[in-house]
Length: 447
Image (cartoon, rainbow, N blue to C red; front, top):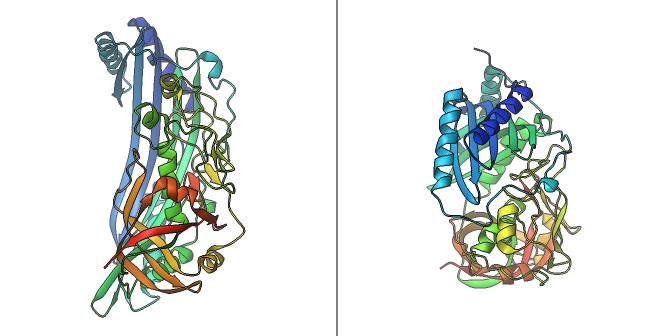
């Protein structure tokens, strides 16, 4: 059977559905309400050992309904759009609202903040690939990877995922906003063996537009290279050394910063950056900006989860914490104004220097290049940071050998303050876009 993925969802029908739900909330006595609808359709193909391991189709529909009775809140979720199901869900939400405690921060965003004139962003690029074509692509990628080096002995699978859908938010202030989205991904996981040692690594590409995906040849080559270079890994003795976080791991390092400035952690007093507005967090050469309207970007959105119009934000300006990331609720709890970040940030872009990774290694001279982190070892309350890691030992600016079974540790405030340079090898495969990050000094625990 040939199956193509297209965003064949009717925008008008979605908006009419949202309007019907909001009218029902009023009919059942809610003072105000909001509805969030997410629809996705697509498939996932995985090839392994030359055969099709799995073909999975998905067609998801999630409808979240929130009602307010005064300052009391109730919520319900459904996937059934029959009228009786809608009525039952609204009834349940209203029942919950009437028996919960009041929350003075609860309620819709003020009407003047809503994105009534939101921009129509280009975020939907359906991929006309069929399931048979996807199977052929995954098998070809695996075949290329397994043929490149006799040390590559197995594949854990090559997967292709493609999906298209819609996101809708509406509320009883008269706002209903929708936009289509697509996402496509190819990944390859390999196993290498040398004598009795075995290592595993991967490569992947992801984009809203299939034209921006890396080629099958690139994915196969990159997966092979990454897997082979892990062979011969050693442990290090415990020491304090400079550390470079490769770009894909640097994203996670800055993800901790995003979590620390997010409203939910702040009003719960579970962030090490509480009461740090206006303070120096990073060196002067670091600026972190949010660009929510970039076309074809994975994190773009014309409005946030409150329906508030998204805008460019500066969170770090020349190293100083200029703003927290807030939605309407967390802003009210903190006595501040929303930054249109309900649901998270949208394309955090980091200022970079002029050096690529090779030049950054030469700047570091001797130290550790981290290419993989393991475990959840971040304490957002204190900023304490400790993760299992693997990567490469570097001397005189050149990689000497792979390292494994080590732990890197520090405190995020100190780590951010000790950033020497950020490379221009930007990894675009995520909502946080950064190059590799060189930190002056960290503790490395090994033998």
